[in-house]
Length: 438
Image 1 (cartoon, one colour):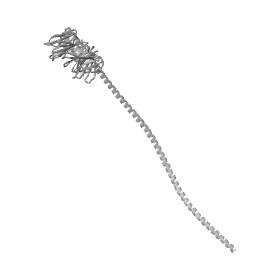
Image 2 (cartoon, one colour):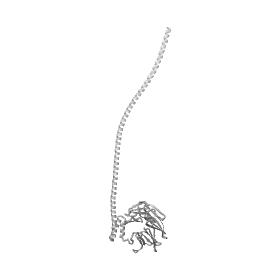
Image 3 (cartoon, helix red, strand yellow):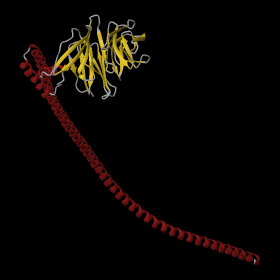
């Protein structure tokens, strides 16, 4: 019993101990649970506060979002209004630009119209001036033509012996020519004035055509002439009276050139038929040159005389009065003149040959086509003139430029240059005096 009792007590004690441990464990657990519960409550409280705050913040955010949406709507409305205003402004700008362009185009058209009007006015002024000028030119040409016609009539009246009427017509011809700035040296005007002034002295001595003349030392008072009819005459002029001595008269000769050796008082003459005549006080001498063709010209150089024919050249020794030598050309001479104090031959092949001596002849091609029949040059003015077989005259200025001039209707027979003026004669019976040539 006692063991049983002790066992019960032990069991009771164990139970009590177990219960105590259990209680302690329970209490500990409860305490932990209380602590967890408190922590949970605190956490719940914190979460509740956070939830409240979150709700407030959400509300605030919702309100802010609403405000933002309202502001966005307002901004969108303002943007749309601004875009509309921008579009209106852009349209107004485009309209203004179009109006500006239209204004510029209108201004440009106005300027162009003004220019056209000015040009038309200038053209009209020019046409009016041209019309007036053409009228003046026509009037000038009419009066100049009238002046030349009056000159021709004056010449005919003087030839008929009506000198008073010829002088009146010559004066009228000169008056119209001067007033309308014509050329007084035109042959009809100048010749009418020359004849009307009665300053021309004329003597008819020769039967044939006079081809050349040569003067003695006393110039105009004593001279010798030769003709195509074989006449060689010596003339003396005193008190407007002329006395003539016939040196040779033989129609077998056809004299073309004459020269006076003043130191020896000897006269040289050549005949186209091939005769070279030496005329002195004592006697006459004739040398025949038959192998160089018809004689055209002679050139005296000291004791030698060069004879130029259509086909060749011969040299005469005047001391011994013999034909020293002769030779043929490779061309045919058509006309002979002088260039740079030397005889120059124009052939039938368009060339010029300058004869500097019997052994030195320089040849070159002419710068134009045609047959030269007369030539003249001037060292002082440095100009040249070529007369052609068809009446044309080629003028070469100091710069070497060639100008074709309408000269005569027929072959030009003689050209002379005095200062800057060209004198020309022709088979058409006229003497032309050109205007100043520069």
